[in-house]
Length: 379
Picture (tube, rainbow, N blue to C red):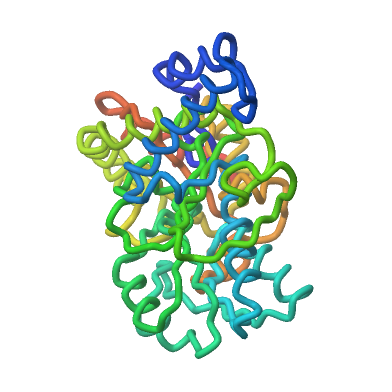
């Protein structure tokens, strides 16, 4: 089997497992307990917090460990906006191509707290321009929440430019970096809050983090024992935090070499698919895109049928976000980019892992895609 759905989740790295294992079996204490076992766990937790902060370009006290990227985005969007309501800031800016955890959080604030939400338009490849962001903000904007790189089409936003626009208006910027953390540097973005998820980096599922600068007010969503400096109550996942810190450091150290190899394979693959499949169209920005993501539409054929045919041939991929799995609706990302709904339902996303495919594998894979599309079209 060739697994090409790493954007949904990627296998646990051996180095990560070895780093976290002691905190499952040996140093297993509750970090809130005031005894030797608990204090050892607390020390490991704070060490992991400092290591995550260093990669993100934040302070250790800015990092809140969460149960994953969805919780981190919920905490950022709801927590920051709710904390600013008493200042008369009742406006939120997002884009229509964001992950469901941002879009659903925005809808919640809209329905239950009377927050006005502006969904800023994107161009045909999913880019947000600084001018569009400038026009979307108003005097009562509480937060701008945008993705660093799109989870379906891989388009990378110019976050520093967008951050500069938001900051000139005195508005904080939250960045969903769940997809980009494996592939792009996260320090120096100019963001005020950054969300990440471990299972995209090689940790077990169930660990993530929100780094939010100390000057930004944040209303907690989980109340209880006051862990995480009162911003996220609940007994901390110490082993998960260690795993996340380890995976982030590995991604940072390996990025140059890994990106070059994966980018070469995905570029060859994209070229060969477009050559071999007449109805194929690449989605997302052809240049400013994640090196591991190649997403296409195949007009006139069912994307789900292509996926099943590919799996029959030993290739596992997806039709887009795993969080929308099972939905028959066309991708909201592609619709926002102006793709016809019927064509949007033909989308297939291939997302490569950190280990590049060998030799002429990209050409062979493209041939399998072409055979699968022809088989579906002829059925």
